[in-house]
Image (cartoon, rainbow, N blue to C red; front, side, top):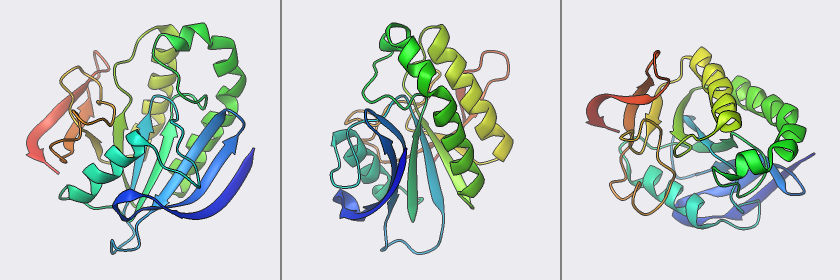
Length: 197
């Protein structure tokens, strides 16, 4: 697995500065916006990586950075991590590709641990979309447990379905993040208050 440094300007003022990519796996991608003062980071947990890398953005990453730049909270750095490192896996694909996902699970878990340990002052955006099936649920629970131990503030674009919506034109149109917490009984995300960020 290679940790590569880059400097490609994405939309909305962000630059891809670091990526951990190996073949069809992306373990993390870090974006930085030099126009935003301070050192606040937004660690974003997604379902699976999109095609964004050090040299090109993509639609979901553009939606994400647009929503962040137009929200009340602005972040100098955004780090993308995922339930699985395999690119473009739909919910039903978790069970279908379970062997491949499990083959990369240890490296992905290590990368998530490293990101959470080194992110400094950060909030966490949960943007996985609905969680379906045994493997996806297992990975989600493991990652949420790690995130909860950091005591970071949790946000979502919306939590109506019980899970943070994926970054797309519908979920990010308001450009506001909703403060959420994990319900201990059901594991679902619930809005803490109606005060958008």
